[in-house]
Length: 421
Image (cartoon, rainbow, N blue to C red; front, side, top):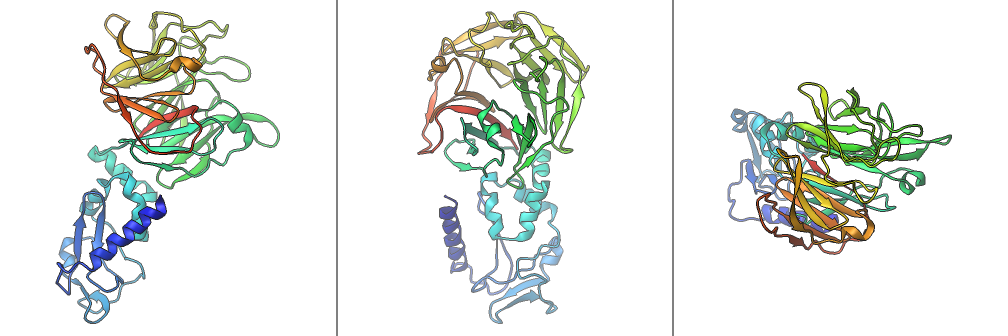
């Protein structure tokens, strides 16, 4: 697919250079096509282009095809065989920041400086500052070392580089979550001496996997959630005990920070972020009793609050609860009945909204992804995707099936998470 896109890009660039509507023999031409940002010099073929970061300086530089050279009015030659960008202006950075992330790979065709800017992470910082964010769905099938990433429209997808872990990592349970532009995957790994818990980190800026950093208390079967460039984890299981400790991951520092302990030890619990608070729901205690209580962590007060009977019934299986937050409302896919429910905060109860278009009961909830896509809910089973715009007051939900073409992956979904960046 990348090769096909590459050919399309080359053809588009050739059309640009041959466009007769641009009759000027000198000048610098800027274009924002909506999907991509291009810099064009009217030369045959394109050669060196010098760009200044001040609008006033643009008048000094010109591109001349009649002499077959590129330079400025003083005759000074560009300093790089590639495009030379001393620094990017605020205006140009803002334009680049508003370009869809799915188009970023094209900048490698434009300039090494652009590629350096992308890898530095500065563009993503600008995107956060101006409130420009995009959703991406990361998914991995059982036993696979590769991950697929879907755009929010779910119409396009790409394959991530293979995760370079050993067989022990792929044969065991894995948990995944996102923090800013980092995809974090936790599992068991063999370091040559012993088997231990490890975290692998995929960075969107560089399109690479890195090992670590490990949690302060390595664990599995824990609850997790995303909050901007941070992620929270709580509970879980070590080789010795069920945990009630919590941690916070910071994308900027690539480090973990201890948080106050929960009131209840729990494993196989589920997490979400709602009302600016980290919720941990359900799971099992240290005696394998299934829990109906939940807890919320308030960063403002740095305390946990226990929510008794947050679940109306004891979950029928030991699988994780399938929960998602859309429009600051908590939804749950009940695997045993294939029904969608919404949590009523004031009454601490649940309202049934109707059936979901997947068979989550087939494997007691395993192999099914249930996530939020901004204001929408996403349900994924095998190679089938459905979305809906939920309404707690609606009598019936309208689910939309997404056709995304042929994808070679294991139909049993093991990990799925959403990145907002």
